[in-house]
Length: 491
Image (cartoon, rainbow, N blue to C red):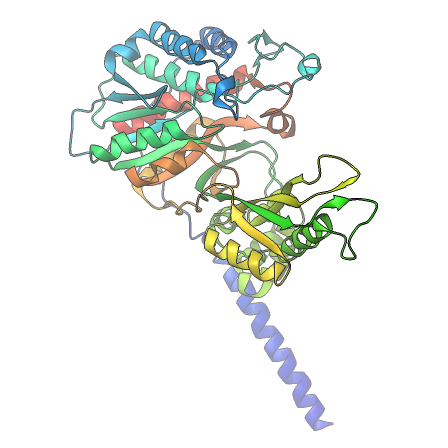
């Protein structure tokens, strides 16, 4: 009995120490990504003519710079119209900046600063938009290229992605130029022509800047935004992307003899082999891990989160499996924690009673920081093992971007302005899609991805979808953000 008593006492003592450690770590927890923003002197607010800005965005939406997968379907004259529109609508900004066209239609503006010892900043917003799905035009509240100003918003394809950013950026530039602002730090604006498809414009701009030895303090492009109802702390949250996932599409091909479907082979033929291969690849996924920008977001918010969340984050060494389970319960949360695998396209026989001579599947990967395309290929090959299939990349993969700093001066300026303008807490996170900014990584110290727009579920669903629209409140917030960011970073 004495032995049992000692064991129980020992267990109680161990439990007590464990509880004490957990509580101490919880109450003393400080986010590793936190930065002191008090040292940043944010430029004052500017006057925003919302009605004029709305008219300008409306006009830009009506210019149909639609990027198609096939370049033959594009209308180059629309890009020329947009360029002319920008130059006539924003004369003060164009007088202050030099303009170059690289690639076919990519715009590079330079507002030269007075102090050449200061690294420039680069602001990005692309010109092109995605097509409207044929037959869905009648589902829109307002025609998709009408640029209608109604119900407190500007409606139409591109009103958010990304003409909303492009026009409000120029509204901010025009406001500063009219007011006599003279930057100390050079400001560069890059507006790609084909972000939605090939990204050749941004690559051309990066090559130009690299040839000139440009190394910007930071780049700001689209990516994340202000979430109006975040599930961690409630209320609004400004998320700034400090990295984005890589992108790769794997083609899996199963060769077969083909023939008539009335006499199928014992193994089912190429389609069955392909099905086994795709199932095997999908079943051998990448494990979720509490690391990188996804974890940094939660760590930043933990001090203001409910006590259980704060305790779990502060003691990830103990609660990591629980954190991963909770975050990964939803597809969007899981995407923050690992490389995702998504079979998207299939190709087989051209006729239902013909066995194909080859069957193929396309699998899209979004590669998380810390993983690589080489690791993806190795894992896929191991999954299919001895199945008679071939694997190959459709196009050369894009590797995941480096993770940008959350302690640099560039981060402090961006985060301070974002907080002041949006009146929302700021946290880093991971962009699970792809942006033009990935091409400019070589000409900048840090690359950030943020649109100062408040998004609820309906706004997020409308991006690339039906009824895309930018509210006038978001439009005003964006103009103020870009003007104050430039004045703060370059003033």
